[in-house]
Length: 239
Image 1 (cartoon, rainbow, N blue to C red):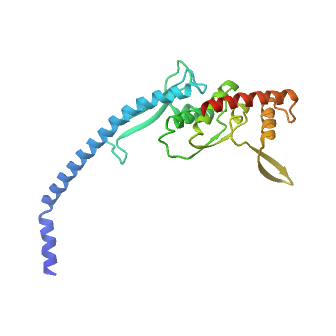
Image 2: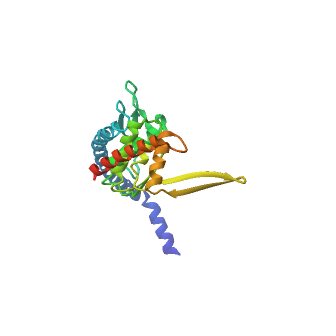
Image 3: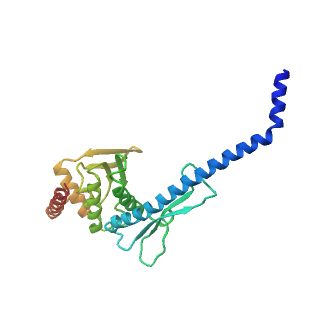
């Protein structure tokens, strides 16, 4: 018991020495941490410029000819965490003459989807995510841009599994497998069915998407065949 008391007294008498030792170690670790954070910040700044250019180039072909995209990297040395001291944000401007603003606040759902597609295209080779799902990525775009989005999705799909929910024939024509999803109500119950379409049904569905009619005319089928033929040429050239 006496030995325990002596140890406690010794600890109390040498508190200042131990505190100085702890502070010295803490200062050393803090300097090392700051050096690592600074190195990470420099790498991020370099990569942010490259990423901004690459994404801008990709989304230019997705209906964003006058759009700007930038990766903002702001350093705060007073707030260092496990990932460094940077505050990173995507900035976006959809139209000429508009200033860059945080993407999460100003982009619509369709714009966000297309920008995500641009990002995923840039990261296609390094991104380890095997499956991508795009829900109505064609929102707010016309048929010409829709075709460009379809080409981009098909190109991205060569290395990943893509699921795309769409009401646009230009996108659906690029699919390797076309599923028809239908919701119905019976006896106050709602059911959702899904069917894999064969070649003939795929053609009919493309015609229906083009015309908006439940039953397509011979002219609608002809238009669908023309679209599918043009799409197949693009798919062949991509391969």
